Structure formats: structure tokens, C-alpha cells
Amino acid sequence: MKAKTLSPEKDKKNINHIPMDASEKVAEIIAYVVLVLLALMAILPCLHVISKGISNGTAVAAGSVIFWPVGFQVEAINYVFTRTAFFTSLKNTLIITVVGTAIAMFTTVTTAYPLSRSDFKGRRFVTLLYVISMVFFGGIVPAYMVVKTIGILDTYWACILPFAIVQFNMFIVKNYFEGLPTEVEESASIDGANDIRTLWSIILPMSVPVLATVALLYAINYWNNYFHVMMYTSSASMKTLQLYLYDIINNSAAITESLYSTSFEGTNYAQNITTEGLNAAAVSMSLVPIIAAYPFVQRYMISGITVGSVKG
Image (tube, rainbow, N blue to C red; front, side):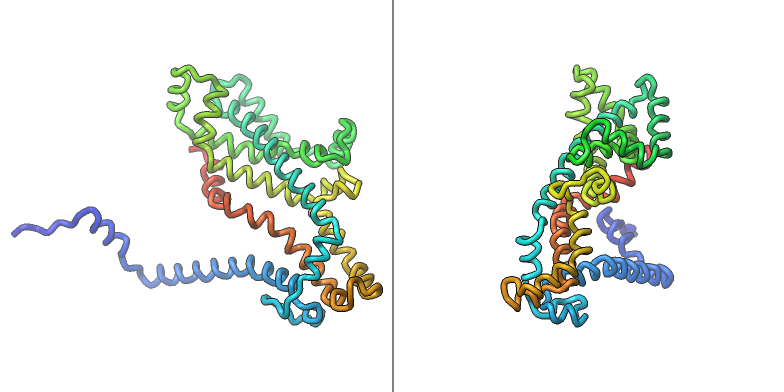
């Protein structure tokens, strides 16, 4: 009698459909519940803020807006766009983020690549210097004195150059480069490619996940930077989005009071702009650019850090 044999496809299908025992099912259910709760913790506050930004001012003042708009108005958003320095602050933040991320990626890659080469003389010593600088920081006052001495206070460069390289990000890229096959570089060398050509044409295309991850980390750092921008800049024209939000939140009560007292553009307009509604509208509009950009690189986030943080 001939024994029945299963094809590889059927074997794989049977393996994938192995029934789980009770403990595994419970663990899976708990994992899904935890993931749903974490997702709600991230989504619901955003819905709450957005709902306040577009809800009727009376409903916002009464505290009846939770996760869904009550009524609808765009006066608060219109005020943010037309009567505040939102677009100037957004422009400053975009310039600092884009230019800063580009410069940071250049310095990070050009530092990580030679340090990942085993034939680089002084590799251990230079790496040790970066480790020491990562652990020990001179302090705020010396950093301010350096920025002031080189004459870049109250400029974009004051918000960009001090963060042109982050040691942690550099080590992620360095470890990723070290995990790439050395045979690829040897083949390129045999074909006559120099180090720059090898880096540009071979190493970088093979390192897209970690580069996207590090670029995202740099962009978030520049985008969210508040303290250093406040310390290095003083003019109103140099305020970034974070400083703008700080000013709006601190002065929103005075703004709404002035609207009521002067009946700015009509009573309905003033009544629809409350302190909480104005704050929510400003915060909601500031979230749009980073939320729009994040989906394009978020898929590299976990895989890039996992691969780059451990030498393969």
C-alpha cells in the first residue's frame, strides 16, 4: 500500500494551522487587548484636541466636547492662520528640520562609514572620543558660549549646527555598516571603485532602512526642539512652531478677552473662539505636517533600529 505524501505547500499550510492550546489563546487575546488600549491612548487625545479646535465655542466652554465635535466652526483655525505668526513659525521649523536633517545625515554617514572599516587607523581612539562625548556633556553655559563666540546667535545655524551629529544615531549607522557583507566592498574595490563611490553606489542603497530610521530620529529632534531654540534665538521672526505654541497657550486667555471686548469681526466670531478652542486649533494645525510625513518612513522605524543596534 502506497503511503500518502503531502506537498510542501500543504505541509506549510498544515504547520500554519496548528491549533493553539488554551494558554496561547489567552496570551494572544491579552496581547490584542493591550495593543488596542495602547492605540486608543495615542488616538483619543488627538481626537479630543482636534474636536475642541473645530467645535462650537459654547460647547467647548461648557466642557461637553470629548472625542467628537459638537457643532462646527472654523473661526479658531481661521484666527490661527490669519491673525497669528503660525506660517512664519512653520516656515522656520521646516527650514531648521529639513536643512538640519540633511546636514546631520551627511555628518553621520561620513563619520560612521570610516569608523565601520576595520582598516581605518585610529578607529578605536576616535570611537572612544565619541563614546566619551556621548556620556559627558560640557553643560548649557559652555554650549551657549560656543554658539555666541562663533557669531551664529539668533540665526538658523544656531538651531542646526549644535545638533549636526548625535552619537547614538551615528553608532546605529556604524553598526549597520559593519553588518553588511564585506565581499560587496571587496568586489567594488576590484572593479576600481574608490571609497566615496563604494559608499554612494553600494553601501547607501543597501542601508535604506537604517538611514530612513535615523533621518526620522533627526527630523523629530529638530521639529520638537524647544529649549535650545529659546536659548539661542531672541527675535520674533526666528520663533519656531514650538515657541509659537508656547506663546499661544500662555496668551490665549488675553487673546480671547480682547476679542470679546472689541467684538472682533462680529459677535459670532468672538463667541466661537474660546481659550481652550484657540489652544486646540493651534496644536491641531501644528500636528498636520509631522503626521503627514510620518507614514512614509514609519515602516523602517522598528526594523532599522533593531538591525542597526546589534552588530550582525
